[in-house]
Each structure stands twice: as C-alpha cells, then as structure tokens.
Image 1 (cartoon, rainbow, N blue to C red):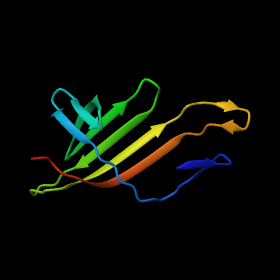
Image 2: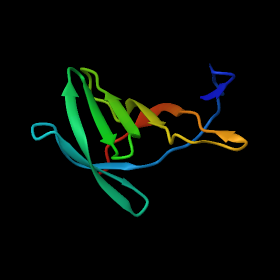
Image 3: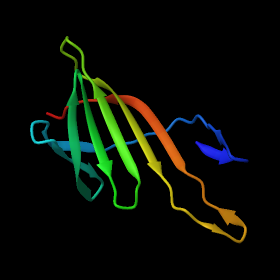
Length: 111
C-alpha cells in the first residue's frame, strides 16, 4: 500500500516470503523467527485456533504472522503476514508515508 494525495492506494502483486518460526512456546508467549542469518525473539499468542507471532520493533515498525489451524490434521496451514513501518521525514522534495504490506499463503511444519 502507498499513499497518494493523502489517500491510500493498493497495489496487488505476487511475492514470495520465506522464514522459519522456531522454539514456539505459547504458554510463555515467545518464539524465534529466522530470516536468512537474522534470528529474533517475537511474541507468540494463542487465540482460539490461531497463533499470532508479533514482532514489535523499537522504531515503531511491526510485523505479525497469523497461522490458522483447523480440527483436521493438515500438512499445510493458512497464514497471513502483515507488516507496517513509518519513518517520519518531511524534507525538500520528499515526504515519507506509512508503508504497509500483507502477504497470504501457507506454512508447513518442518520434519
């Protein structure tokens, strides 16, 4: 999503995103997310049949991955990844706008 003239504008594109969620402990509310060489602790929150993984950053940006379960045994689970960030800058010839992205697809447990 981008902003044009103060109004949101949505661009729909196909994209791929790969990362791993490890050490998931919803009782303690934590997990690790690994993207390439980066490995960060995130919040893991169980809500009904969903688990939300929330990555809050000191700069105010946030990413959340929601994984949806069902009653039957599945090899893949539906998932949604959402990310927001905003670096406020208003200077000559440029004014920053909030950046928002959302991807959806499937995730699968590793053996």
